[in-house]
Length: 108
Image (tube, rainbow, N blue to C red):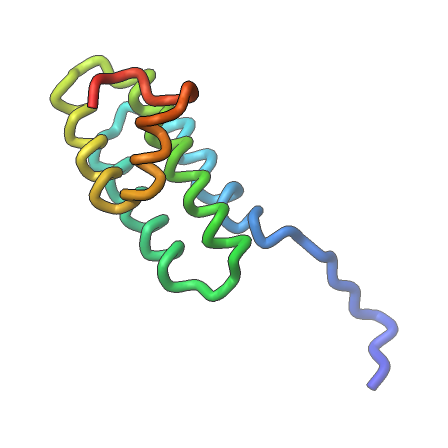
């Protein structure tokens, strides 16, 4: 069938993650509980969607959330809670972050 009046814009699948989680990560950086829930949501996305690009975007956003929070959270116990949450949900990424020069700014 031909539909001459229908127009669909193509979009990047990655934008589903960055467009929804990015603003919250930026604006709610000081809210520990919200950041924990975002990490859990990204973990569920990473493990339950078949699209590799969405899995990768979820992982990248989780790393960004962790790094942003560690930079802005002043209370060390809050940082520790977030680190533990991230390590439990994203163990491979946590190991990679803790062994590179681009590592998180805390002692692990």
